[in-house]
Structures are given as structure tokens and as C-alpha cells.
Image (cartoon, rainbow, N blue to C red; front, side):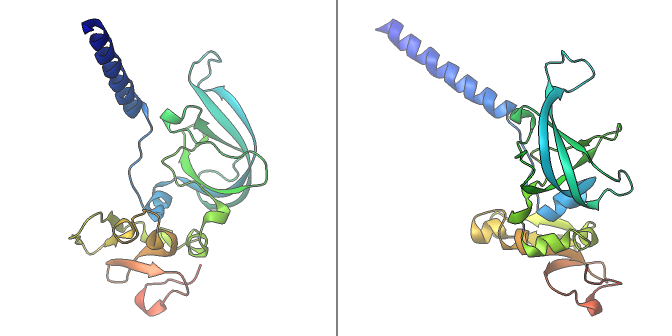
Length: 221
């Protein structure tokens, strides 16, 4: 009886240890508004995924760490012109615990891809980047990619989980989707941009023609 109890306890401890290891090894991303992710990215493009291939992460073909090389067809570049003109491939870790992302390589589905550019000129993407099927983006988000998001990159978007919430600086926008809708990507994420105004403060702006009188040298993208 004592042996069975000890065995049961050992099994529970092993299970708890395994689950803790899973949490440690899992990919973890900081919460961020889509605009912030666009601002932080080195490159933002609209593309189709033509094919995928598993390759070694380094020059050594026996390297146990593998990457997925996605061959893409670039449709439009919104950011990154000064660093790269045309993107043929993007790379992501094969292992999801390393934040690798799985995309449909059927040359049909279009994606918004954001990522970073390595010193060798390769474009790397992962789960913590803002990567969405193009058709899932709102009209406001699509229009904001051209210019509007960039006009608010000096602004700070602060998420509010519970009341009271308050702004600490004039260049701050309060992100309340979770508080109001109990989901992160609600109305503010889908339809609003945090824009810097002529006096240096920031405020939410919903899609539509930009009010010229409230901004400096701004026009509809």
C-alpha cells in the first residue's frame, strides 16, 4: 500500500515537473497593440507563401536546430524599403517553443508579415511578430499600414486590464479592449490608431479622412 502511494506521488511530481518544463520552454510574447508591433518591425509586407522547406539554422547541415524557409511572392512592401527592396524568402524556427510560426504555403492565402532583418539580409518572422491573414485585417488596419501607424510610433500605447486606469504622459493612449470587450484585439486594435497631434500629445484616431486642422502636415494615406 505504501509502495503504491509512493509510486502515485512520484507520478504526480513527474507530471508537475513536466508541465513546468513545458511552460518554461513555451514561446512567450509581450502583449502589444498591432500598431506597436508594426512600429517595432524592421519590415512589413503583404505576401503569398509559395512553398516551404526545412533547413539548418546555421551553415552546418547537421545543426540540430532547424528553420522553415518560406518562399514568398511579395505583393506590397509597407516598411523596410531602405534595407531591402524585394523579399524572396522569410525564415522562422521549426520549433513552436522557439516561437516558430506555421503558415499556409499554398500560393493562395495572403498574409501581412512583419519581422526583423538580420545582418546577412535575411528576413526572420516569429509568433511575437504581427502576422495575420490579409483578409482578417479591418479596412482601417489596411489603410493605416501605408502611413498612419508610422505617425504614431513616438506614442506609447498602454493596456488597461482593470480599473482604475490612467494616463501618465501626454503622448500616451489607453488601450481598453480587454477591459471593455474581454479580448485583446477588439475595436481599438482593429479600427483605431494612436496618433501624435500637433502639440506633441497622442490620442486615438478612428479610420476615415484625417482632420488636417488637428495634425501637422498629415493627409489621407
